[in-house]
Length: 609
Image 1: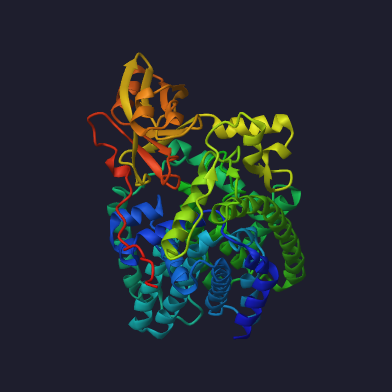
Image 2: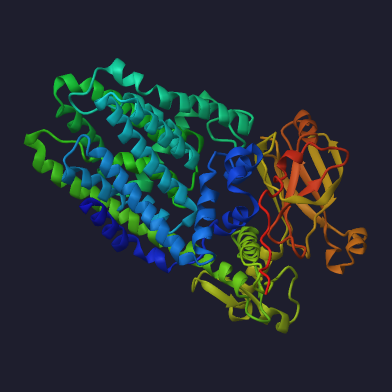
């Protein structure tokens, strides 16, 4: 328990500032989904699992929000306390696992390093990654139980390992490759020979096979719904190069110190192998090879050239675990002093990168907190404008949180926040608009900004944007309802022209076309739709029409996409601000798979007085 207490204390020292946080990042979407779907449907209904998990099976994420909501209601502080406890448990589970091979104080080093890295500093501030933390706890305990099964030759430990491994896979798909560790990591000295060890790995292997079948069933194929940079063997070299850069820069930093630290990690690996007795080197090499599979395999389908690792450092969580364990390997005695010196350089590099990561994330967290805060407590007379670099995502998340609170607290009154969808023509209208200012990292009145900056902010929020999302059919569930329509689709040579309307107010339409993998040149222009304005009785929907033109590499490609594409937009009509709307197609239901499943959780009703 001393190790647990020390790790908890270290978590509070390093990451205790998380307790001052409110709702951030994807909390709005996750909380809203937690009010729509029952725990049973999250895990047992493939449509719901697919919707809440995006391109990976991760029902534990939304389930964790449901657990927190049942315990703590709508108060974020205990959510973060639970989150930090989960981080402490992950470090403790790693410590407990390593005690199979190392002394207690030696095993404490990797667990402490785990909390020092950039992934830990990012993840401690993000409730949306609690399933990563719980997944590591389950994965480490699964391997710990598997070692017990091998040492004691008892099936009960093997079955426990299989169950824990299944739990880790349901937390996040990155833990599925840990089956390689359960099979190939060498147990402590004195354990039975390899055939006996593999026999006790059968339950976990059966879970891995069942999980693979489940994934194929849920995503209608092994690849899922999101395309990756690894689209063929010819791309393997560039993807591996991108992974190497991401690991080095994301964990150790992009400068000279990071490169030196990366070299020292390789030296640590070589020294650790050299320190092993000759009879242990081959099992050790097999264990290292299994660890490399665990680290690299998930990244093959995420990382590519141009990948934003700074904004997604959480995906380096498992590689960071591997780097921490690496420094627990004993070096030859004659190199003991060099080991300490190398470790100091490594820690310096890690701390520097963690500091940079924290500075990068602070601004983003502040923006989310400001928009979420406005949605929950809108100041009278003010209208919220979307930040210029976030499409409509920030507004969508904020309104999702508003709807989530409505569902969680039906007995309370909730003031609907006013959103700025129309261009303010007078000084009085401008004085009501507030938006994000990067200079102060806060919400400010539009009129408090310089005139040129006002126009930039308005242009970004009010312009129409067309996005091409290279997502193949069948599409994953991502739209909440139908809204708007595609009226005509024509092909002329290499050009595909799409005309229709969206359920939007004013000119700020954000439209996405998907269902095909080629990314053509594209532009969009607004069109007046008096028929739509009359049908809804809203003159501000006069400009709801659009014409999008896509230019492909060949006429055949344009013809193919004309029968494959789907279109979505962010809702703007009252009651739809938290929704993604799917545009109807003429005489086709091919996009129905993109609709979210119907809610499976009964809405709460106000208590009787």
